[in-house]
Amino acid sequence: MGFYDDQVLPRVIDKLLGNRRMAPLRERAMEGLHGTVLELGFGSGPNVPLYPAAVERVLAVDPAVVGRKLAAPRVAASPVAVDYVGLDGQTLPVEDASVDCVLSTWTLCTILDVGAALAEARRVLRPGGALYFLEHGLSDDPRVAARQHRWNGLQQKVAGGCNLDRPIDELIAAAGFEVQRCSTFRIAGPKISSFMYSGVAARD
Ligand SMILES: C[S@@+](CC[C@H](N)C(=O)[O-])C[C@H]1O[C@@H](n2cnc3c(N)ncnc32)[C@H](O)[C@@H]1O
Image (cartoon, rainbow, N blue to C red; front, side, top):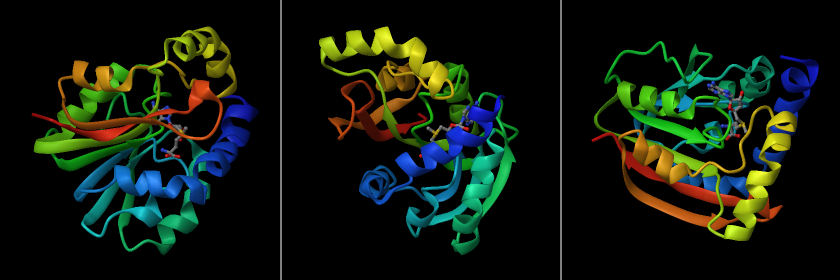
């Protein structure tokens, strides 16, 4: 990883996604989150102050060292215990059927083999467990979608491997989840990166 991806990008992401404007979206996406939660792409921990009271413990997974430093004050101030358990969502060092929920916010866009990460998420969830997600992805407007496909290569280079054009709900369903709730909507910002998917998908 170069200096930009390693040192600069996590700070930029923290400013862009860790701000107050995103908090209501995060809170809505986490409604119902409970028990032991595995958080994929924990980053700088912007969800930590917003976890619902029913969250008992968080297992954090993220490769970014700077993200961990930025997260430290949020983790220290939180009543919820956060344990770093791994660096890569594609291979989770976590037992089968051992967590109540998996949480992913703005992360399924970035993981290289998103199918592998979703399969791992499903593996570690208990029967009856669920994946809670808030992600940007492929727009439902064909003109915007065409632009997303066109700009995807550049986006991956400047944004740490982030993809603009992943059909998030389809990918989750293809991994064997039952998408129980999924709302799609636009937030402020460039159209190519502001089409959102937020919802819950059950393991079985
Ligand atoms: C756009 S940031 C989102 C961070 C945070 N989840 C949020 O809501 O602001 C994407 C995160 O995914 C992490 N990431 C990239 N590849 C990953 C992988 N293979 N497994 C787990 N996390 C990964 C990055 O380090 C980064 O923290």
